[in-house]
Image (tube, rainbow, N blue to C red; front, side):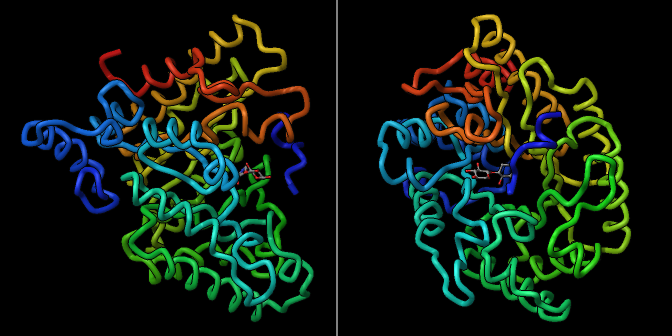
Length: 363
Ligand code: XIL
């Protein structure tokens, strides 16, 4: 898969407090529709993505970059009309939060959390322990295992503490496996061993007991060696009483290649009692995209979202961006692009309709 070789371093309006229990959200919306004379568009017009998601009590999210958030009102108009959840595309990664040791920069992350509160959106936190986007003081610090343990705990305590009650789910660990199911080399894995995962989950739970705690990865959507290894780990963590609540399936797909085993694979994790979420959906097309490829992409968006929403404990679907204007795909997968539901001028693409139909059980 191209993904394996990528250079991957590389309330106001509805008057409800932030993240609603998912099932309650739909019920409350129904009640509100009866008791309020009218809902503002942002409280989710029925035919928007968030309208369909609210109606069934799930999340439809988007990864948000600080650039567009602060500079592009066409962007925020679509974001706030269509999405009931946001993920920081980069602003909550370690290199962004703590560029020098003890020198924190919360500005961009705070902006997104405040934006979400103002627009009745939940926040998915991304991400705490990852091999990539680490500050150089940490990557090159030659820390001992004991020091790294303390540093990771402090990072989790500080970050979850700051956003306690404002983030409904955290990707506590990200991308911990190789394609063959072995543990991927990382600062954490190499120095601390696999036990860091259970420790990180326990520290995160202590810091924000209400947040759903996730393991997140890519190329685990199909039933394959990597997802088998994750399944075994998840089962073991649950047996040990470790506070693991969910699995995030990034779902960076190539057009026409949504895995045929995806739904059954998500179901086996859901059957363990875990939430499942699609956390970073995008579907890239070799450029220039043809009409046939855009139509296939639409079918793929519908199928990918249904593969999650058709499983009992699916909490929702997050798209890795809103518009092709800002997608990470062209810069990472050379020759590919057009991966998202909106084009560069904010016109909805066929994939918007596919995603919308995937969210709308009546479609
Ligand atoms: C990507 C961002 O989209 C880019 O802006 C950044 O340069 C690199 O990271 N898996 C993840 C995400 O978990 O954090 C990555 O986001 C995409 C792949």
